[in-house]
Length: 381
Image (cartoon, rainbow, N blue to C red; front, side):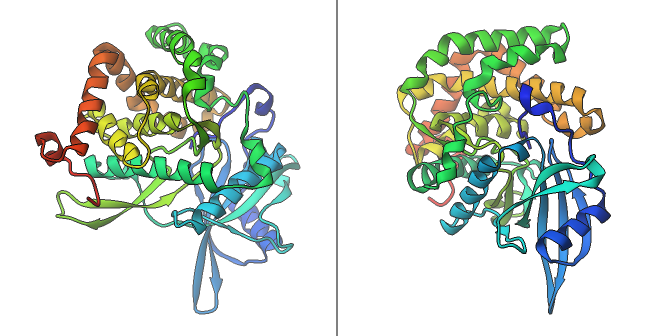
């Protein structure tokens, strides 16, 4: 959802292919005849849900026309190879359909876009319901935390491909280490209390997180495990309290080298958006994450500021990108509807109290006899 922008990468406008041209692209590049096509919402790429007929049935795909990263083929290759690797490891990740030339992607000109060239992929369509569309509960937050740790651990320990070096993305605005770079986008907020809050978050981040980065454990981050990029299916449980399993992981365009604690912070922030008790979410996500990969004391101590930093990134960049693409404003501002309220509440309650809630909840999972654990039993235990 949040494929990032940076100064040099705002050159390409968002692709604007029509459905007919997109269908022709699928035929020309992949040799498949489209029987049905519909646009999918996106941040700054262009995506289509595509159905192609075959003997006795139909196959479904997502046609992904990449925007600013089209100029970085190694990066798209790394993202796609990572998806293929994860699928082979048993994660519910899409895989590419090869082009007629036998490649996983193709740089194509799009006449509807002023003859600019965009990288095109056809990915298997993953059925499921986005977390954003369900009534969330502690069990799904735990599952998301567990997924975040398992995913990063698999990528960091076993994913080896020459293109992976492109995941060292330096000034990439969506890497959590780059919260201080938000300074250059603050004008998108105007002059108001929101800008003052973000400035406060950035200053605290500079003073308390940046000096600690070297003490965090490095890894490859998915970087965008948000409520629209995780698909779930109901597996069991009573109708009023269904249990969910993760059945799809979408959008690897924000992958970069970072730190394990970044991924849990990002997951906490986006799960807060979908909860009636946002300040309580972090403990369940943290418990799931730590069932795979316990955090160190220094990593835990940075969690509050990392979550605040991700809120700042999401809110500032949404405002900035909405100025560039006002026609896509409704989609871009999805997080902002509740995000500002949650960030303000976090800062009002304060780091000490919020952390106490998170850590006590997480501790309860390790000691199931406690009342808190009884309210939210970890999935699969």
